[in-house]
Image (cartoon, rainbow, N blue to C red; front, top):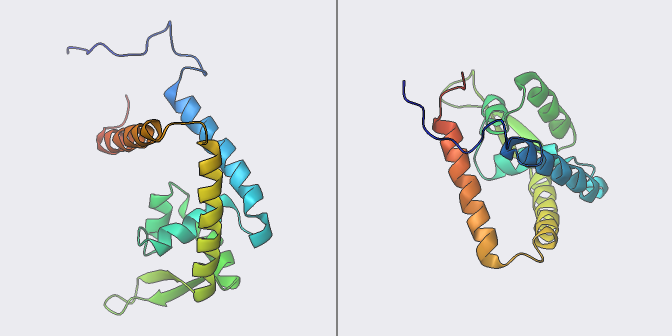
Length: 157
């Protein structure tokens, strides 16, 4: 079995150089700041992410939403219960398969999701304030490429 020359080895993999650690740290910092930005709406970043996934059609069911957000199915069901009780999400049985429960946003759910989306836009514009637009576009392209690579890769040994 021939191994390819990789980037990482035992001399250069540390938390401050690990792509995985840096991505996770950035995600945690982003979520914490967005949780504060959404406080007046009574939402968390994870709840908002669920609303947006439903809004943009990425996840028509609770199971699909859990997969899309890499979340536990049971925890996702409980979160949807909360969002439904708040009048933000609606559950409807599928016409062609009564076993399937489709998710959609109520009018209030859409309004809250879009108000929070404006806050997200403000936050990201602030975080990227001193980045040239070309670097932002390149960064996003690289993240999309990494996502595609990870989706297509077999599990690590």
